[in-house]
Length: 153
Image (cartoon, rainbow, N blue to C red):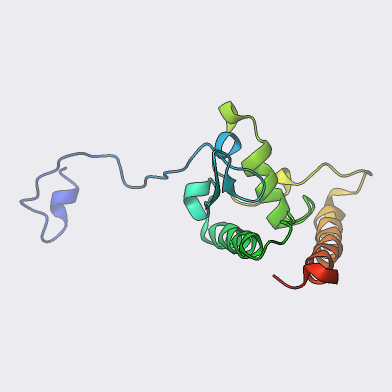
């Protein structure tokens, strides 16, 4: 309190509660969400962003994009395709839906969320290998979304 009161304008401030600057509200996604980001107990209700259990602005936007894509496809009667786990989007979905519920905590995307590598790769080369693998898998996923009678979105 003493330090805060040295800030101009806070000399007479009353402090109700100290120590709560940031609050991260989130659900236990592994218990409540399926891989399309719909509530298991309430299909058609999609969750995204921080509330879904991801950490970070980019991750929240990415999950929002996927929830919107899935909602649009559901409304059009199209199949819902989850991105491959080797992609950042797929790794986040996997984290949200496959982590043990008792151990679940929000996470930024990181290589620890990706599936284990099938072959031994030198540490310096792993990031590039994973990036190339993700781009390949992402292109294949995009093709599945846009080809045949499924059509775009």
